[in-house]
Image 1 (tube, rainbow, N blue to C red):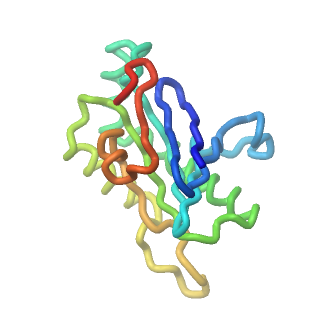
Image 2 (cartoon, rainbow, N blue to C red):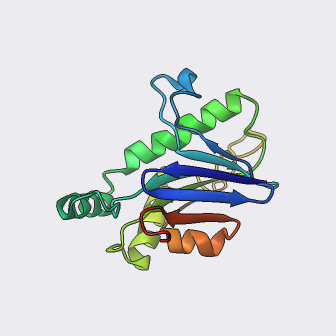
Amino acid sequence: MTDVNEEGDLRITASGSAPLRKFDDPATHQALGPMKAADFIIDRPRDLIFLEMKDPDNPSASAANRREFRTEMLAERHDQDLKYKFRDSFLYEWASGRATKPITFVVLVELSSLTPAELLARTDQLRRKLPARAAAPAGWSQHFLDDCIVLNAAEWNRRFPSLLIERISAGQV
């Protein structure tokens, strides 16, 4: 089984047994209403990945837009939106009875000017704003976020080789 989906100029191809759902599509998820949504949900055998893709390196983006995104990303100005995208996606999946496995929230940022150290720092900052890796509070049977990661497409492809991300306009990332 192979699922192929696109988000802007990025294509994700899921081969194997990991169904890929375009989650923020208003045609299929009208019930979200004012709720925020991750771009994709990937249902792997042992866990779920909520994937949010940001692509300021899209060839149609201006250099000024890339610089602005970088500045905002490093200043943590996207964190509030990302926090709600995870939380609302989790609530939707939980209410649908599908949030039954550990969940990893991945923010894929395709911006060549971000260094690995900056992506790692963004991961650490986002983990502090989400309950990632936190012990479940008393009375809870489980925690609801196993981990969150901020990475680029090259690192994604290393970590998840059966879930290839490539740039459509170039044929590769």
